[in-house]
Length: 146
Length: 164
Image 1 (spheres, rainbow over the protein chains, first blue to last red):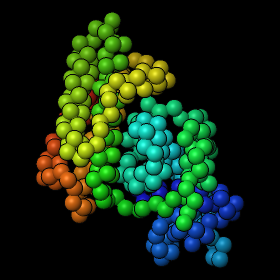
Image 2 (spheres, rainbow over the protein chains, first blue to last red; image 1 turned 90 degrees about the vertical axis):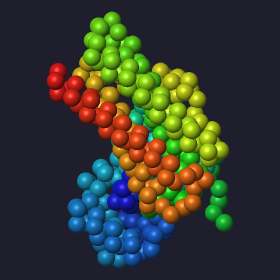
Image 3 (tube, rainbow over the protein chains, first blue to last red; image 1 turned 180 degrees about the horizontal axis):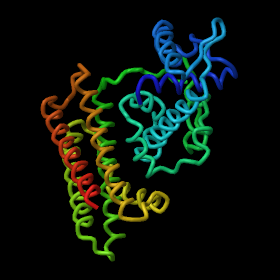
């Protein structure tokens, strides 16, 4: 998944969590990057017609941006589900984040042929647990942050 | 949410091992699906497609064993083929192509996906300055030669598709 898709996915999730535009700070925090880097990429997404930035409010995805963000989130769900259910990786959330940049959508699609993903994906993604709510192991909450 | 690292570099043996493990599963998926297609076509005796599929299954098994050789050096377990085969079996009905064109197209996706996977993996290893427990040159040689064979596979399937 390329960097732009990682941003779109993150903006989509933050937007849902905040129930409104996603603030640059929240996006930068979620991605572990500086606000300046986040701003730069948000600018590129705006140029491509995928996001709109309102001063003092934050970023909102356009309809095209939402379509791409949902695809990216679906790819991410496939990676998480594959790690958890096929490779039995306990730390599947952390590993999915580490590996998502190296796993292309086409590769995820092929992995999707052996996992049992629900039709409602990616609406099943729960930002609180950082995992698909239908994933059996997702019932275990993420460790609280220190 | 857990913080995302926006980078395409591989920083540890563990990440490398996991990616090689994913490569093994991809090869297993290709092998099992090609075998399924092969069996479903058997009655219809299309020799060219049969040969293509059986060669593809054989090549995937060979790639798998080379990847297994690499991950042994990292102290990580491989994923048993029968486990992946049963997962392919369980889902095959939902994703199976229903004619020759579909089978060839599926095979083309297999080869292209594998090529893309190795290409991204090689790029990520080349972009990383991490010290792996494996010999870097040997690792890259193995992956590059597998990638080359995937590229040949793409050409072979494309050629058959164009001719038909």
